[in-house]
Image (cartoon, rainbow, N blue to C red; front, side, top):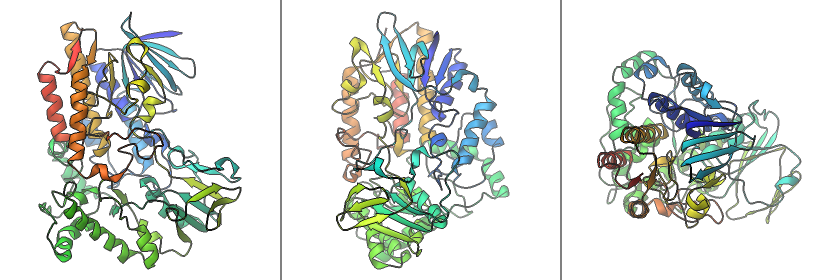
Length: 539
């Protein structure tokens, strides 16, 4: 049976939930289509051992409701996946969101009906819904990337993918385990798996930089004091240059001032600045030097500090060197935050295998094979990342004006205006899409900013009698050029990361996130809105 609404929203993660809340405030009827059986998005699917957010819990949470932030009690500095999922469920229940969410519905197509100026959205389960607007809240890291290795189907033991983890969990006790990948998911999972497994073999192609989380329970008295200033913290997250991270002084110590550059400093002077940040823990480590991501000489000094930390932690010198990244600037790939990752390689039951030097040839019935030999294990874990930012969108058949598909529009790489709208696709929005700060930011901060901007835009349309909005082609070209100019002024493109789509064979190499930070980006979006939504055409 065909259903009609004002707005069709795809995805019931934090973005889809907040969208539904804001659309209701506007008096608009919306339906959210969600592939999973519950809210939570990435926190519904990613249940691998050790899964946590890399932003502090108190910042990685909604700010739109002071009552919500005061009533919810986070237990740790970095909440575990089950606690984040419980928070999502709490928000859904508190604001009665689930009645407008259809679960178990995987969207197969979204087609713009030009004659009727509405979107027809179909799911693989046969549900059909029409809406004047279609908003994609599909998440930036929601399509797992399988490694291109021969013979995966030949493995006779269980294969688990980090981002599609069984809800019932996995018991590794007494098992021999192979893990392929050493990205952020693996860095969180490996220490936990190592504590259970009889033997763990980690197959690493590219080492990643990681800093200690220094995770700990949140003291109730300290938390009460922090919450007295919650609104001030929120303003800093939204307007500061830290991309929504930082300023959460978990320990009662004074902030260490930011230094301008590490260039020209001695290793001892660099260490004097960085050591307090290392001890404090968290991704705010990269904020110690103002030019960390624009000055190669300064970046090298910071990277060498981290490499020396790895060498001091890992007892075997050869293993330590394998774990030291040397081929890309620190921070040019999203820096990881860990609990005991490097220490794990001091365990007798853990082996690091360098598959950059000796690549994996094939997976066999009992393990895998390289040129140099074979490795046997009972369980295989794939921690090989995502088709980031565009994967979920391009997996659907999205068609705009004249039947043009989004895949055709983005054949040479994603083109978007502000990461919000796409030329040729009227009444179509993307939350934290390519061209926005997105994955370079605290996602909750960026999600709220995007949704609030969209709500303001829709309110403007309702008040002005407009029925159609579309990103201007020239404005989109100029913004895409600006995004890449900003990126090229930094060290980000040298990372060869999924920010560029470099982890997906055949994917066009375009730097997708906006690297100037959430504060400057917010100002640009607000300026566009004040100027009658400059760069968008209304009908």
